[in-house]
Length: 263
Image (spheres, helix red, strand yellow):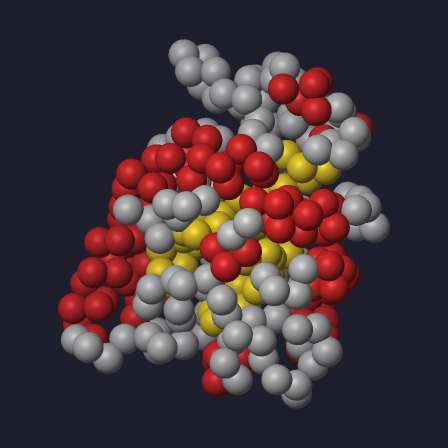
């Protein structure tokens, strides 16, 4: 196993990362959700990015806009930025546009650390990793972000384009996916591991922690599960839709640990 890269973003022990923003309370992946996460006290946000047909990096999780847009239809990669801007992804009383990565970084990137998931799973060979690297460099604060994906090729390509930014490897609770991770972990530089919450006690997750990788399970929402997950010595933080609940659990865990918490 090679040297594990240092995790750069200055997250505190048992960090609370708002999944798609405070998505339990606001429309996911919107500026409102990200600002709500900041107001609730989250340490970081997670967001998902895709490439529009004309090359803009937009914040959207699904391959299509069908679920999150009230009236829009179609695959993100087949729609232009102007077309995407016409869709409302908020509630009827409060219309929201699909934001760009630049807009989110400018709005909250100096208040919150940012995890950017490359979600080009339906177009794995597109130039999204390179475009995200360019945006981060133009923004000028690479120490405040880290990039993750389930796609190891996308992670490798991003790492080649922007080696100064930390990388996190996402895993699914499937035997084949875990096998691939264990094989690729030897050659794919990554400073963090983002396992599914059902994988949190797996020996290979604990082994990754022992090697120096930061471990951030996703997506944990219920208070008992949050407290139990954060209490594990090898867990550095969690992704959650409910950052306020997670912060309550974190406070209890840190109080029980006294001064012995995290690295």
